[in-house]
Length: 488
Image (tube, rainbow, N blue to C red; front, side, top):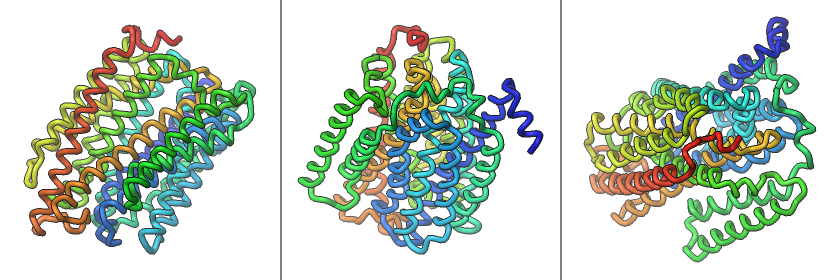
């Protein structure tokens, strides 16, 4: 402990010790997504629930994260990043332990949401800490490191989760998170130090915490998700009413933020063309990528009849690009036009998604794996460069709330993508006369239900591919060719 304290006190070494602490947290929390993703088919079968219900283990978790990202980013700007970050890790560990002993689906969902609450605090601060401990001309390097850890987490998660689910059972996934989370908490407590954060100053974050803005932003996200995901099978009139209410709530949020003396989020940032188009591109990209992350395990396990550990192995391909190209894209976006990487990444992702339009009930891995790899390479090029461009316009005193916002784009877009994909597939299955029950989508059952599921899956990937081409087009016209340096 004396050694850690001594190293932490040396300002020249602090950023690397802090990088290790945040990287470990990123690794564990991102791996959780892959672990649970592989476990979803087994959870659905074991707890006898349908596709519409089991998707809430993803959407409820992501919604909890989304609601808290901006408020907790702002709170960390005011009181310090370490307190908020470690509180989030502690809540995540508690939620994982309770999920391990959950007796039924409802309690599991509740504890999964508790995990999401913890990660709302964590993800609202991890990128802020990373970008704060590196100088502005090294911001891309910091984001590249962050994306690398995300990629490694996405690789380890499905592999580790597949082994645990295949040998012990899905509950072991949550138990593992308890032990790993405790290690992250202890290391972070020893290493992180707000006093050595070169860009964090409490007196730079003027104003009070924006409680009305927090409530309005959270209400908008909840109402929007309920309107799009349709968790209660509401009639179309009620869904339309809830959607309109979400739009009204968003309008009130914008109205409040432009008039309060201490806004949670600076709406004026959207007056910057590059910031706005970067946000649009990021949102659409994560809508598209979420479809593969959520649906591919069901296709591999319930249509192609893969074992969980083989599903996990296949899903690791989605992370290779982040590990290989994330650091490269991050570093180079510091010195050259970020649009190069955004366009190249969007093109690769679009091609990968178009390839999945041709899957069937007996598709070879020679089609599936290259498609997943292309999507992975695309995300590796696109994400760090896009983050660097967006953050380039942000004042130093707002780095916490702003990194929380771009993390919000990721999680909210993932929720939207999962919900939309579920609606499309459910429609195809219902139109063919089947309930969207994953227990029935297995090899050897009524072939009609597998055909309906795959047809819906193809439609999802077609829509996603078209949206990714829209991202490519927007990226081409989003700047003047000077990259993030136009902001500085």
